[in-house]
Amino acid sequence: MAVEKKVAAGRRGAHQKWRVLTCKVGLDGHDRGVKVVSRALRDAGVEVIYAGLRQTPEMVVEAAIQEDVDAIGVSLHSGAHMTLIPRILELLKERDASEIIVFGGGIIPEDDALELKRLGVAEIFGPGTSLQAIVEFVNRGFQQAA
Image 1 (spheres, one colour):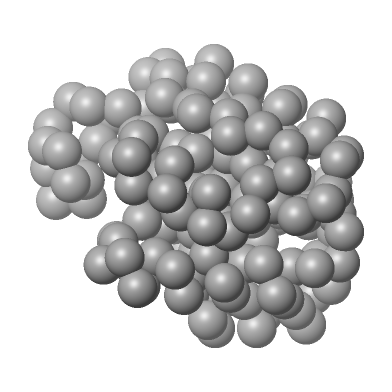
Image 2 (tube, rainbow, N blue to C red):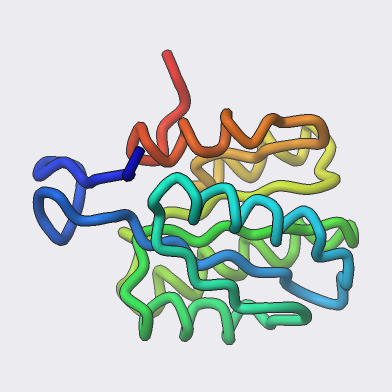
């Protein structure tokens, strides 16, 4: 089933696929999870751009703007999530690109996940989250089920 934008939700208009940049930020080299999520999103009809390993927040934001994505999916297992993800949000704001949604996943403690959401991250997916839950999050326009 293809993921299509709704006119009211998307920037591009009706019947266009979501574009998501997925990435590993910082020195974290554990990329199996982000690759599996990227493939699941692609298989669900999402246009996925995988930025690769060891990206800086600056590199991620630049790529997101150049690729005209709707969202950035950040994977972190290094413990630097409270530094790197807020920096991505800050850079998006500085570049007047705050409409780009940020979501993440990895080893992120619940209290930190709540703080990241308070700062503007749409969702944090922890260990054990099903691929279907992530795909459905994208299908709903980057919003969790009520």
